[in-house]
Length: 172
Image (cartoon, rainbow, N blue to C red; front, top):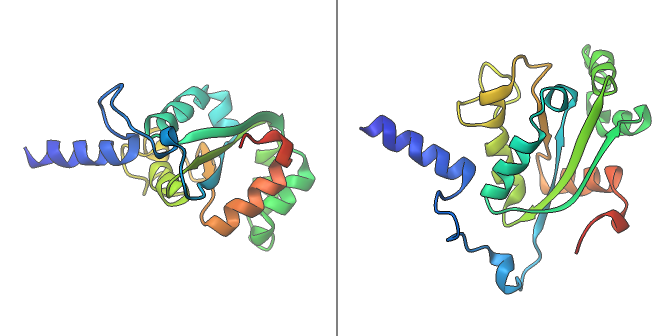
């Protein structure tokens, strides 16, 4: 019985409430505080496996608002800037090669605590350590093919959003 409650609690945290039509979002009344934004990117393996809709559904069910989205073949210049902090890692060349191997879907999600909550929804980078119910726990097959990226801090989100989107491409 406690297993079921634990699983239900995890599902509620990751996917939001299970009461269609009863979800009340802060933005429905016009928020009086600035909403946080996070960059979420479905990587080439996620696009190839047709998981984009599933990712969008999970974020929508959680109550976040999609304010920008595009599908593109990521330019190496943007990838180099996005992953600049990993440049000295031995896997960096393989990472850039993989990320430019197919299209990615880049999205900006808005909502209260969206950065922190999206990291919980996405799960651990290593698929072996990712909890069931998280996107990586449910769909990742290997640490190098882990389906999705999500900003890890508000500061990183701001930098990543500016890197991937022009301000005119985002809804206010």
